[in-house]
Length: 71
Figure 1 (cartoon, one colour):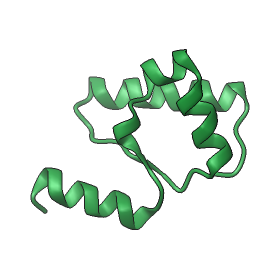
Figure 2 (cartoon, one colour):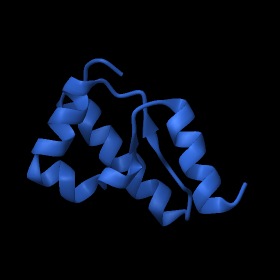
Figure 3 (cartoon, rainbow, N blue to C red):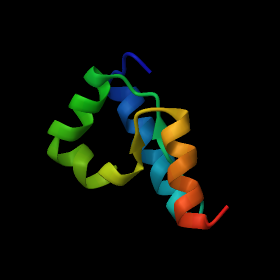
Figure 4 (cartoon, helix red, strand yellow):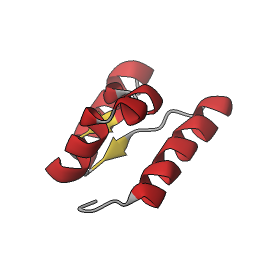
């Protein structure tokens, strides 16, 4: 993802909350530096979207999943 507006950020927050409610592991991957910077530097977003679910690439996300779920 190379760009995100406030509606997109709200959607990311809501998707994460829904995943938590349903006990679904959710990782965001492929976000570019600009989007990551927005999430990492906004207090409200930092509280709503944990840094641990932000992954640089799909490969990184899959490796992370394999370690936490013993896939």
